Length: 287
Image (cartoon, rainbow, N blue to C red; front, top):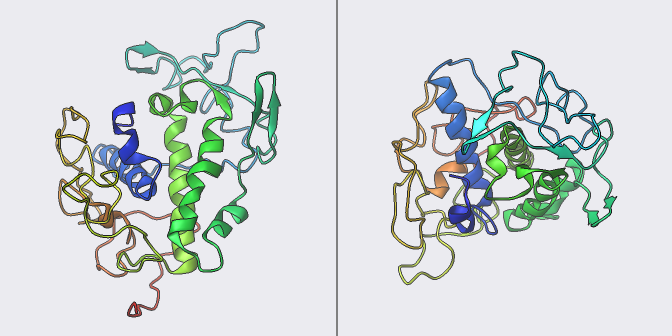
């Protein structure tokens, strides 16, 4: 799903945040079909995280000189023989001291990598008007900067989802968006301050598909027609939830991902975060 062929639909424009919200929610709902108590955790990538990158949790690189970047786990760890795309093991090596926050640039022999933007500075990206069109710049930093803080598949779009860390990273990206929405009352999909691209993609192909409110989302729409990828995963559409009725269709649209608490639609997506209260805002008409 998170592959080179879908990159233009999922990155580089307004649909970046809704598509990745759908992606992590798809995984969470699939896991909840097995165990309804499951909730995806997030990685606060602007803070020190020595416990996350310990062998007992997401694995740690070997300390032996010249050893490959395959992280090691204690015997019997659930991720010990992690296999994806036919490859066994998780290749990942941090490019900074994980006991310190990665909020300053790192200098490497081949150049430098950017700082990961702090949470406070991330919320400021929307500017004084708290505009989604400005806030979505967080795709570059903190999001992109967090990806490239590692050597390994996690630092490249076509391969990033091979690493389970991807989902903790993107759950935090979604948490930042959700908290920004809550802080600024930006859950109304009809308000251009909440989302910046309206309508559906023009039939003449103008603009990347998948970024307008009315666009259906690949791969859940099972669409193989150009400019969509020529394949879809061998599975049905968007998974149902034991807790929610939204998006209510196996083929969700971008706009279905905005009002996650159901403030305007009355139907939530069935998730929240520990710092995003279930709290109804005052619903006002948009001028």
